[in-house]
Image 1 (spheres, helix red, strand yellow):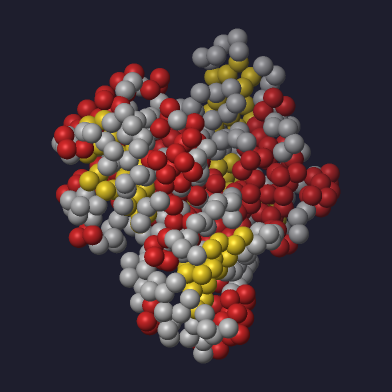
Image 2: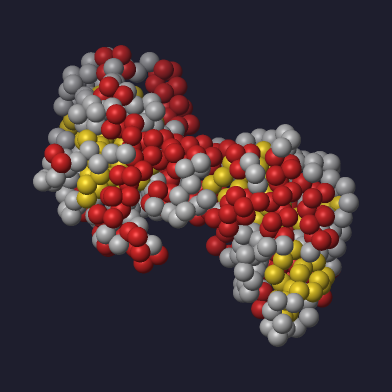
Length: 570
């Protein structure tokens, strides 16, 4: 562990061991047979795989072919979302009189134009009002970029704006030192801290800054899901110093949207992938190729796939060193017998006549011309493929290196998804560009599962844990019944942080029964196995809890009736 956990009493020993990810059992994916799709899908055939491979491309695929265990999704992504404690679950009566720090999402509440019809905006406002109505003393904290919005040059202007939205008196404070030290606490319904963008310590997750920020705070409420992929003092660091850390209503809803977009089991399901930077997104693309029934590339990444297939494309649209990753994605799709669709034609413009558009096949774009939109043949093939889908994920913009936002293909793609969403198809749209097109073209945005911040989703699809999520309490503990889980809770306690498979403290518990042992582990499956072992051996002096000890260690240990004598980090 990279952070020091200081127990309330007793000693802390750090074992100088190699830290590793105790992965869970691989997720077994069913091999799919021939698809329901008919027609020409980027050269794929349901029975024979890829038809359009040249011999050279086949040799390259064999050269860069990854091992079978790398081809199949190991289920790691499914374990990166823990069951966090939410404000909805937190007893409302326990909020009265408590000092609550709320990390709100400035991109939602301070964005322009603010649309109160958008559910995320209402959820963010409801979190603050709910806490105030419950009798909590509310502190607001966030970061905002003043140069992009002259209206919010100062904390006072932001406070005035939030006051008009909430119909409550929001007063700015010039300090970052907790509620109890503010001189204006009696003059306000809600306090607003200074803009976090001014502090380098925020980005560095500075321990001292986080402690100062949470001074006097009882409960931390994270309602900025768009920052979950970052390790900040205001979404991770402060959780060390608060008695409870929970997800707000907007955070909870966005977490649900992420799960809905990436984990539901409707089939056939297809991912529409836009944007570029295939090198950075390769792990996420592998995951999508492992769970989807088809991939459709509509952005700059389409040219990397076409280039890997040996098709002639403008070299200025090819990213360097992407061939290997592109071929791995193609090989995985071929192994699973799923279609990979790339555009067949583009609307293009030339530097000499930028407003004049001509239609060219993908393999025949003349020198001096650049793609700006998907052509009719490409859109027809996409429509044919999507017409049989039960679930669609659109992530990334339909945009190319030299083009503005694609007003041709993107808008028609959005209208296509609108029609599909009216039936039984579940449609998730990820990223600002894709969401903006949907909002402009659709009369009923509620048909879609919308996630505006694509960075969070890409990080999750790569199999990485979201720090802002894992820092929250995982429904533990409010009241641990120590008398039920341990025979004698007055015995000295030894806590193992990151207990893994539990072999260490299970062995100790069997040999030294004069002590109690507690294992804290973030992996639910490992904890369930350990508890099964406890029952099998009939042990009464050891227990395991599935939790993120970074945020829950203090609250767990402080409720123990006996004495803590040792905490180990393995």
